[in-house]
Length: 374
Image 1 (tube, rainbow, N blue to C red):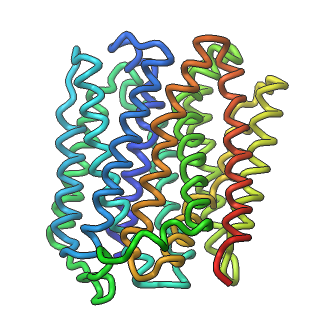
Image 2 (cartoon, rainbow, N blue to C red):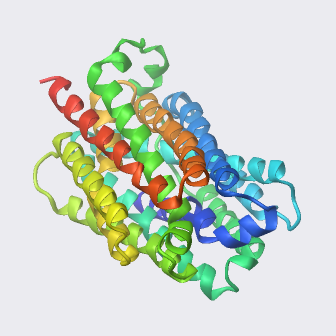
């Protein structure tokens, strides 16, 4: 499962940053201001949220290969059929559909990982999620090497072809059937999901996904309009942030023992300090700032998912689906909110406002640690 899961998460990383990497081309082609461009990020997060929420009960009950195959084909169709001159409304539909497919296979692979490794799932989860920044790091460079952001349509079509290849691999791969106790996961009541520790993890996800999406989407705008640097600096900043995330997730794999939510609390506090300080001081080394932010936040998502699955082992699909799906609401809200702040004030203030959401990550992580079952 790890090889095909690694490939899927690598392409997931491509999807997460392709909008930001193609910012100038997309904004020019569709005539978007910061707020409208943020809506594209919201559409991606909304699609992911729906995908992970829908997939949770399905993964707990039904054969996994058809679900996996359908999800990759959805992405391939959505990304591979974009066209020049399309309306903003159509673009939103394409982006939402690619998020939908990605959300489905994200939940499926997370649930399979928790099922197979149980209390030892943090390391394999960290490995799979380390593939996300690999794809994210490579994407801005690939965009610049294949004609730049102005050729965004061709780049999207290439992503569609990659997902078609992944679909062929999925069709030839056997995946484990739902375990007998997981098959009854749909009959698990809501009480376990209302535990303070689980709710706190959902809050962590909401803030983390929102911050990650906003940093990625507006890195180029912040570099050019906020720091008066070149577009290339912003693209490198996106890669740098995801390089930091990759480094942190690889280090997480080397840790001994079981990590807990205290690591999430510390991550949020460090990231808040970096974002607030960096934007307030106007530090010109945006690549270093973004790399440090990525490193600080790197363990939040895999830890959150693994801890959620461990909290409710009788329904791992629902657990990881809910925590990731509800978390994706942050990606739905924060990008347009950040864009609106930028349009009303300036991009530096908008980026600095993300520090407050990192403080929320820290506070929710502390609640999750204190209220988790002993």
